[in-house]
Length: 106
Image (cartoon, rainbow, N blue to C red; front, top):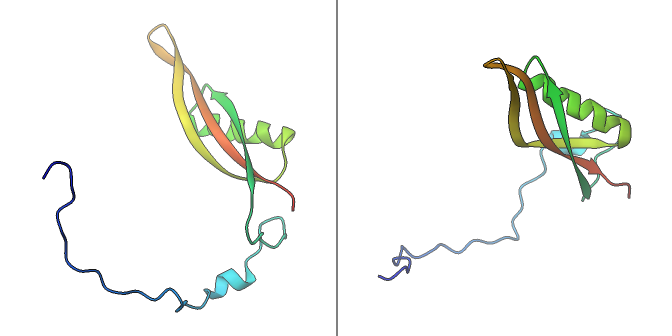
């Protein structure tokens, strides 16, 4: 077939005009800070690397805590890279790079 998708069953027509009601939690949701959620938030991403001699989780917590000192309204993070330092054939330090989303003001 040379890279083409095989013909599948006919697709049913779907009307996008019918919308389900919003869940109850969405109508009353508030952030931990007490702010109402933004309807269409926009984020700026920053990238930081946290370190810990204890664990990956501690390295992430250290990265987020430090980012909180230089940026406001932190909302989410994603782990980009995990690596470590070895001393005498033992893990001496965890290094975790995270991207953190900061909500921008309206």
